[in-house]
Image 1 (cartoon, rainbow, N blue to C red):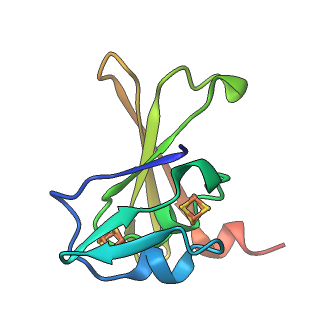
Image 2 (image 1 turned 180 degrees about the vertical axis):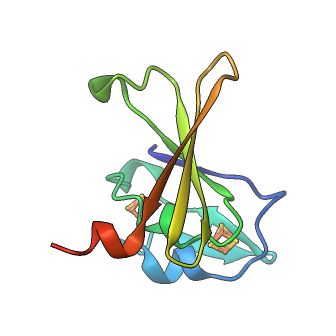
Amino acid sequence: MSIRINQNKCIGCKRCCDSCPGTLIDIQNNKACMLYPKDCWGCASCVKECPVGAIDFFLGADIGGNGSTMHVEGKGDILNWQITKPDGETKIITINRKDSNKY
Ligand code: SF4
Ligand code: SF4
């Protein structure tokens, strides 16, 4: 499974459901639920669309993640990717959507 949904943060906006190319997420009792975790290929579309940072993306060992997770808190074109290591240490990487889509 590449993502984990924090249902305490989820506001049921459905943006993750609409953005998932595999239709893997649905809303149940006003909260997003991952229905087919084994089918997730980790594209991170849902992570970027979530307006409240409720979706954690697991960073696999193949890219040196070693149990770290990443979620995004966006403001307009600015996306703040917060990486949380297993020991609780965090790092924030800020990306401007306009710059990343420039090419
Ligand atoms: S990471 Fe991609 S494939 Fe996986 S649930 Fe999110 S949008 Fe769907
Ligand atoms: S995008 Fe985020 S807040 Fe909206 S339904 Fe999905 S997990 Fe919940």
